[in-house]
Length: 277
Picture 1 (tube, rainbow, N blue to C red):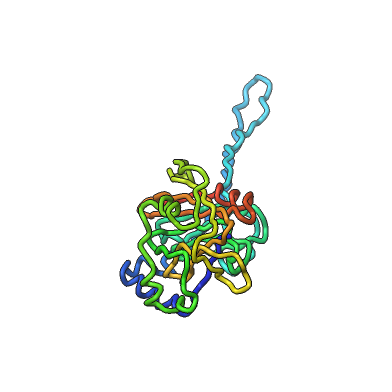
Picture 2: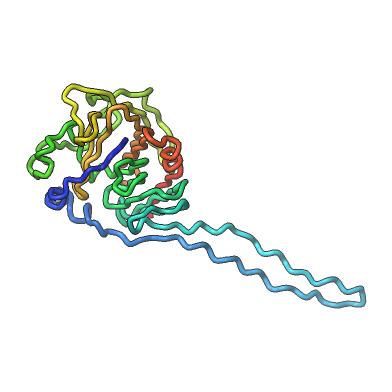
């Protein structure tokens, strides 16, 4: 299961330090307004034409049939705490004002979080079990598989163990302890763009420890979002599919968690469409 966990007190300080290096525009939590797409207006039928009368029998009056166009679906945004109804949605905050993400929630009762650098669709409000995550790699840093839980609220510690996101994220996963690639990397189309895709399984590794006292399985920490304070990890036995792609100027990773509800996770992922304005 992909999980998010937030070291609450470190989040604000770390975000400030991280954003200072990127520039304020990179990490603004309100850098875009909500965008909704309203249904297209109904076409107007042309006026009926009365034919001229002659000595011949009168021809019946006719009205040309209006052209029909299918209205675009109205897309909701991820406002409030959820859960959300099934249907079409648009994420407007993840990548800033020049980008959007359209997707479909295939079932009622799912949760969505659209924030700077991170769109998460999950089975629960706390995103303890995610289905799909869309991540801005420029707003992320990579983490070692094990963190010192006593220091995750220490800004200096979190910065000292982090590293820049790699150019080849798929190769980075294959080099992680306990992580096995399930088949080779493939080039595919995803969300309207060319992407590279590979599936990974998480197994035991030396030094692995649980992330929670009530969970026996060891966890693999892999990514940290400084703007939100969340870090992301998998448990031993989890399977994820990772897509890496470029959307305009954005380096993007999409993590599809196939551990708990694989069909639901794939349905969400397959519906994603990236937008550039």
